[in-house]
Image (cartoon, rainbow, N blue to C red; front, top):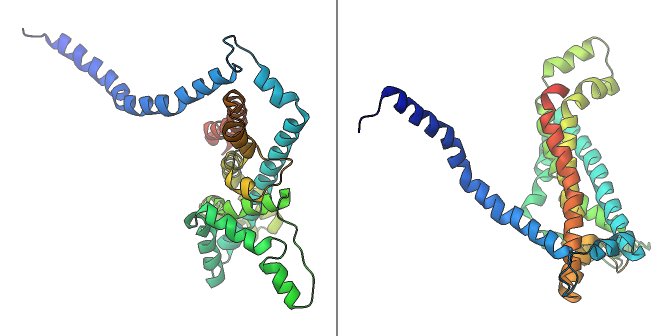
Length: 288
């Protein structure tokens, strides 16, 4: 059967319209199977309790009303938010130093910012514990010098924040990437008209980097709000990070419904950062 030119054009047009959907279909199926389906399964499991078939919000009420669990949620948010704030501040200072000091020390600092990426997390945490615990390396060095020094960083929020900061040093590189995009001519022009360091930071540097601030902050928050290794090894018995609480609900208490509910709560907390990330990227051109 011979097709007319108009029919051929219509067939080709339909194929061209379907081609993008066919190309994205494998990735969509992977996302559907590895992300959407487990999330929906967790939500369904969280709305049941024991062998009951009817839907219930008892598992969510437990985590959102129980004083111990509320304390765990507040503790987790405190550690995660403080990690974000301090990591971004330290990252900015490191990025500024590397950007405006082209010397051997700045190159060494730049190399050290990516070092944590090549060290396994478990090894890093145990190494840090050997150094900062009472009776550890720092305490023995102080004792050798005739002093008593106990950092008291084990089983406390400040110890968790310190180790989290070490893991998040590489995000300084993300801020550095935005600083390198600032033209040297722009900085020199501002200096020529009398701009001091604070004005350079406020008028030129921050407007060029605050998008990266939001993105880095979103990833740091998501990586720490549900972290497990560091809180499990260095955290105390109470309060606890939600990652450790989830582990205990699932493995020790075998309460899969409550574990699913806590998973959904963690997913909701991380979604807040994801929303910030999406909004920042969508409004990028407008902010520029």
